[in-house]
Amino acid sequence: MPQHVLSGKDAPQPMVGRKYPKDWTRRRSLVFTAFKIPAMAPDLSSNRAVKMLNAAAEGKYGVLGVVSYNLETIVACIRAAEAKSSPLQILLFPWALKYSPLLVDLAAHAARSAKVPITVHMDHAQEAEIIKQASQIVAEDGTPAFDSIMVDMSHYEKEENLSKTKELVALCHQRGIATEAEPGRIEGGEDGVQDTAELEGMMTTAEEVDEFVATGIDFLAPAFGNMHGDYHGVHNIRLDYDRLQAVQNKARGRVQLVLHGTNEFPPDIMKKCIDRGVTRVNVNKVVLSEYNAYVAENTHKVPLTQLMETGTKLIQEACERWMDNIGSSGKA
Ligand SMILES: [Zn+2]
Image 1 (tube, rainbow, N blue to C red):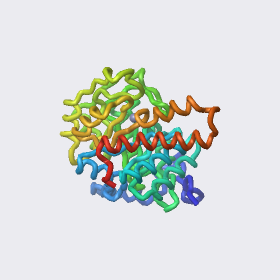
Image 2: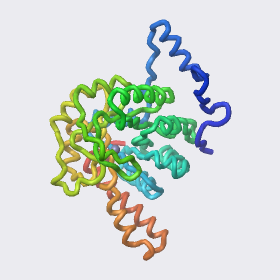
Image 3: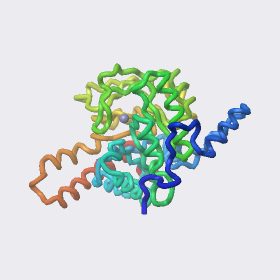
Image 4: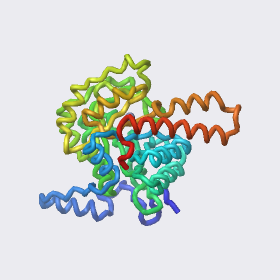
């Protein structure tokens, strides 16, 4: 049976009133620090998400990161990936934990029972507590349910962002979980993510790449004109490709780039980003809009079973089209 969180004696002990957690790894690193011998960085080379995006970078193709809110989307992801023999990442927001941990169990089980490589990623985890909670969730095979977690501290000022990111990256790495961060700020909000529209949009600089790589992250989500939510027309999508290329020149061989804010992106724009080093492309509306329209149109008009089946099929078809577009078909 899948376990939602570690329980009993394995549960993390509260830090209040005690200087250090009763945790050997942490104590060992403190010992190393005392003698000025750096603790070995955890080896994430066998992490499934790291391996998947390294392969995408090597093969110069993109991998879909599908924002998943429900059963239909997760089923569609698995079917599309298996039909196209493509890798894929299922993306859940912290909302999933609040709604029901069963959604995490479902995604983790689906990923592990698929015939092709599929990972589960938590996107935009904006609170330390959520990251700690998510990192403790264990799948049925005893491994962490999340292969990767986005440590999104972009709502803090730079120094605090960097120090919090470093601390939380170390926490995830101790459990073998890969991490992602967002230097600069990707404007806008998305269903399930805190709206940052009131915060001034800031583009990622080459200098910030170094600062964030130093926190230990594995994946980097650059801000180069991309934004969350809607662009209200393809003509409003204005990306700074030179900046993306500069970021990639800095990041190459150290972290993989991931793309946020792809609503309304046509295939040629997606391809230009992949040509400049993007590996995972987060997709929301480009794979869900037909499904959303179908559900809006047909709720109460067709049986729920048909609503689910046809809805799943629409998401699957959209995912398959995008797998062809971004070159991941046949790469599993
Ligand atoms: Zn995002």
